[in-house]
Every structure is written in C-alpha cells, then in structure tokens.
Amino acid sequence: MEKQPSTLIMDVKLQKDALARPIKFTPPLYKQRYQFIIQLVSKHKPKKVADLGCADCRLLWMLKFCNCIEVLVGLDISEEVMKEKISVLFNFSASRYTLSPLPGDYLQPSERALTVTLHQGSVAHKDPCMLGFDMVTCIELIEHLEAKELEKFPEVVFGFMSPAMIIISTPNSEFNPLLSVTLFRHPDHKFEWNRAQFQNWALDTAAHYGYRVEFTGLGVPPPGKDVGFCTQIGVFVRNDLKNREPDKFEKCREHAYKTVFKAVYPSLKDEKYLQNAVVGEVFRTAQLIARRILDCKISNPVEIEPSLQPQHCFLKYLEHFPLAEKDNRSMEPFINGSTVSIPLEKIFSFPKVHHLCGTFETLTKLITGKVTLSKDGTAVLIDVEYENEEN
Ligand code: SAM
Image (cartoon, rainbow, N blue to C red):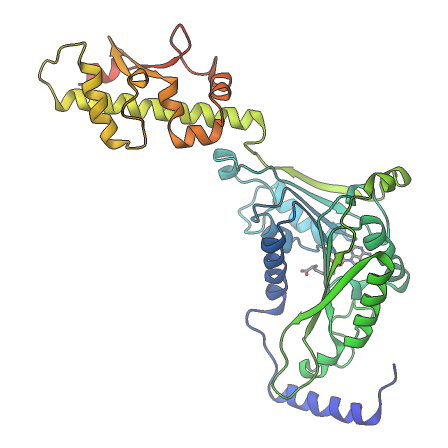
C-alpha cells in the first residue's frame, strides 16, 4: 500500500511529537494484553485454552490461576524460548512464573483438575492435540509468521482447531510514528498491518470459516491523533457452536508437535487426593471434638455420673460448633475409658467434610481402612490415653 505525500507529512509530524514526548503505557501494553485475556476468560469461562506463540509462557502462568480452566496448552515454534521456563519448572525453582505444581498445591489440592502442556511446533501445522478447545489466544503472533505460514494459519486455527473463540492481537502500524518506529516494532516482525489491512484479513477469514469478529484494541492514542489503538485486537466467535471434531480427528491422526512439558496438578477430582483430604479432615475434626470433650472434663472436675458425662461435655462442645445438630442424640460422641467415640454422622455434619464427600456413603468408603473405626463402622475412635495421663 503506497503512502500519499500528505500521509507522509503527517507521519513525520507524528514522529517529531513522539520524539518530544515518547508515549508510555501504564501498565505496559503486554500486561494490558494479558489482562484483556484474563477478563475474557472470567466472562466466558472456557475449560480448555491454548496459547499459540506462547514464548516464555507468562500468559499461561497467569491463566493457571483462572479456576474455570482445566486444560491449558502452550505452543511455540521455538523450544528455546520455552526452555528457560521449562528448566525452571523442572528445577522447582522459586520462579514467579513456574507452571509446575508447587508444594502448596499438593498440601491443599484444588477442586478442579488442571493439566498444563507445552508443545513445540508451528501454527502452520495441524495436530489432533489441538482439537476441542474453547478458546485460542494468538497474542502478537501473526506478525512473526512468514508469508507461507500466514497463508496456512487460518486453515489450521480457524478451519482445523476451530475453537469457540479466537483472540488475535497484532501491532497497528498507524500508531508506529507515535512510538518513533520507522519500519517495524521488532526485528523479527515480517509485516505490520494498519487497521484496514488487519480488519480486511480478519473479516475475510471469519466469513470463510464461519466466525464473526469484533474489533477492539489497547493503548489509546493521545487526543487529536486519529491513529487507532497501539495494539489492535480481533475477537472471533464461531457461529456454529456444535462440535465438529470427531470428523477432523479421523482425518488427522499424525502428531506434528513435540510435547516438551506436561504437568498434571493434584486435584480432588482424583480419588487419591480426595481420599487424603477426606481422611485428613475427618481426623482433624475427630481430634477437635475429642479435645473439646477433654477440655470440658478439665474445666468441670466435679465427679459427674458417668452416664451423664458424654452429653454434658458434648453440649459444652456444641457451644463452640453451632453448626452441629444439637438435638440429634444419636450423633453424640462419648468417652469410653481412654477412647473417644465420635459417630460418623456427627463428623459428616461438619460443612467441610460434607462438602468434600457429598454423600455419607462416599465418606464411609474413603475412610474405611484409613481411620480407626468402631466395630460396627459407625464411629471414629480417638485414643486419648496420653491426654488423660497429661491431665
Ligand atoms: N504471545 C507472547 C506474548 O504475548 O507475550 C509472545 C509473542 S512473541 C512476540 C511471538 C512468538 O511467536 C515467539 O515466541 C515465536 O517463537 C513464536 N512463533 C513464531 N512463529 C511461530 C509459528 N510458526 N508457530 C508457533 N509459534 C511461532
């Protein structure tokens, strides 16, 4: 597209202005781009998200904290740019941007399942591992593609992957004079489009692959400069949200990408972690109840008739736990010698245990063999001999 003399004069004027007062965005534009994606994720709650051209995985790192996401995938042509991140991940470094689960994730597994995978490969190639995504982000990627790759990009991303939503951001070349940029913003850029060029490409692509597109951007120009946003963004939404993937899987079984990292986060959806959490919570709750009963025994040293003792103590204990059902006597714990017996029904009535297990049957199933139970299996037994000696 050849520039008219009047446009050139305007560019020179804009550049002079830029040199006089260089534009700085706060927060920096790259952070605003990530924030833009996070907001879209909060709004649309995708479960499977892929970031194409993920570079050092910072966006992925931010996305791992979005609780709706269960599958997070990064793709980049360069293993090198991801490598720094990957080695950090394997070394378990204290990096802020680690994609690996941290010790805290194991101590308190999340309710959602999360898998993070990084692939090395090109957006110009199809791989079945990219099917079934709800959202695909391409942040400052397309301007790095060679002409041939750019030509293939719509067929792969829109035609083959065809996620419900695609977000593409790219520099708006009309803004460049304000940044004192003469040709491109980065030496690796193969092109930079003005608004018309990007919007024409986006509208054609959307129409061809059954998407609609809305345009927006980030980085507002100074007042009086009608150059558009510094970063231009197209948000594409697929018109037909029916799943068309099995068909494609048949056609493309070949894996073109190399998986360079995979992390499966500990989750309560996995029975192993759920069982650990339930057993821990049951044990904590039972200990707490036993402790309260013993405390109550200490603060009431008067000899109470043994048959009355449990109820008396338990009523005291209930004052600390108003959520427990006060009128259900079958749920009352009692002391027998050096053992406190706490009915499972009682433990199940505690909100955290209830929430973790869902049903009484699940509670019973998960703790059997892991916690000491009464002979009939209806109560947790806590040995308080040591505490009694102490007292
Ligand atoms: N999306 C990241 C962000 O916003 O922070 C960084 C984008 S970086 C400017 C462009 C990335 O695209 C680079 O990491 C580059 O390696 C990657 N890239 C270039 N050509 C690619 C291709 N054909 N397929 C996948 N990634 C590619």
